Image (cartoon, rainbow, N blue to C red; front, side):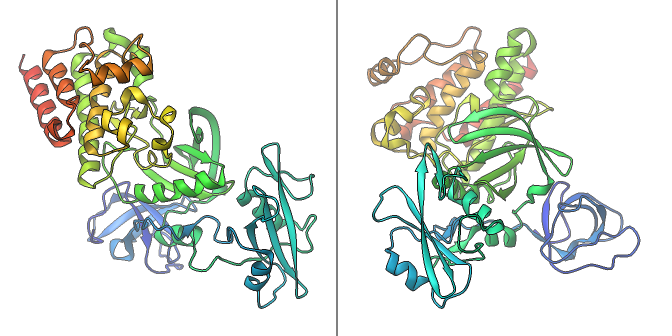
Length: 447
């Protein structure tokens, strides 16, 4: 996008320093992130809010670049200092030339499952065993940490039981610091500006909290486990590549106690709860169709980007204050290696080929979309009522499909049935589903 047309809400990165602004202009340094508030009269000028200071002011569009998409790179690491399975002797070799406070972490050879923190001081390398103690990590049994990232952060501030404070991480050869890459691309946010509030959801990997960032309401996922946080990093990178009115927007990332993923806050919660708490009397058929269309459009966009959701369900659709439905968790669904353990799969939403052969595709997402349609038109009922997971799997193989929910228009039920074709190739694309729903809405308007 050129500097001439930045829509409101666009997050941009500044290309130069501008530290001596004139009256009403915004001050910034090269690499700062700003949010466009509005275009102002005068060619190429904008009012923008500085994401760090919260100040608003004017700037010229040519001084901005689009926030960069982060490449999904396996060398991108939250823990570039983690060297994995190397011996004590190799660790000593890596920490050359000697430098006080230079450190790395390795896996323990003697005590599988534990780690070793290796620290250089006075030309010597000291090896500290990091024990697992009741779900936490500890070097001295006094200080306990939920993950390695936490532990390193602590000992960079305080010496504690170590021979010296940790000063400089020794990166594993080839590894890149996620922190540097996120900052360079303009996605790193500052923990000091984040205020966390109540829990609004609970996922497999951690809580979702309501929060505030620079006065803006946000939703925050905090992933504390090192391994999971690292896996989420790749998925978060995928989220930086997509922007659509029917996808929940990623605002940025904070690296502290693992990973905080900061997203837009949608005040009306998820679609299941929205429908269950309002019901037929308050939500007309037209609104249900609009929700279905919103989801289809978001998924059509993901399909065009060759992104597969894998966990499309009404619980993963969030509703805005203006009643717009947005698909969430689209970048994150692939973190869990679900195929390795069938019990982790949301069986009632998953296509038969994905359940049996771990074959996930846009077409398996279409199957899930059919279930989501059923949830929507049944006002949030759980699919396959009264059937066990085992029964569902067996019955689907025999050609069984759910009956239409009460009061569901026949055309919408026909769409569900198309989505539930056993052969993936016979299922419609999200583009086709979008067209059919638009037609249905026009028909409803004409009635």
